[in-house]
Length: 248
Image 1 (cartoon, rainbow, N blue to C red):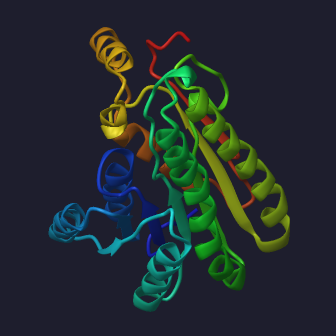
Image 2: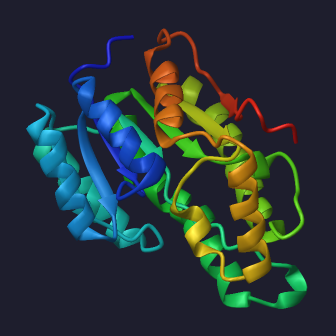
């Protein structure tokens, strides 16, 4: 499928997978709306993409706020006339055991990882329905398929994303010609690990990074491009992307 000239909204675009995806999409001729809370980083990424010949706009956005998501989507449509792609990438992963009772972290994960996905979909889907075309990417995880100690709540949020993605695909694909792809990465080098406040689990992640070559954000961006370029008759429903060295 020809993707040049399409318009994408990328959440969590200020770093990691989101920033890498924005760069890759822009390099393919896609106009990119960069949605995140850190405006200074977004502005810097817009400058970088523009200098490389691409199109991008900074959209300061908190995915936990439905009105903020809607404002970002509306601003993107106002500037470019449509939204063809949503990359639902914003997420948090503060590891801890349940009996540590980091309840605020649980709630924040649910707000960002689950409600944030729903809010962004609700903001862009009416436009895609009006167009009778679109492609939604929801970022789940290996943790949406398997459960790990210390990741119990995170696993629950990513399992919810996986389930929502498949149901969404079944409902809006046949009816509105909107494709849905759930991306499920293994270990990716990103700022997710900076959210870990439990010293023991933070050390475990540092030790893991020293013994295994993590994926890079660009690897996930390339995975998204693969699904985007697939023929219109084909919906790549799920992509499970792992480091070669990750044996679990």
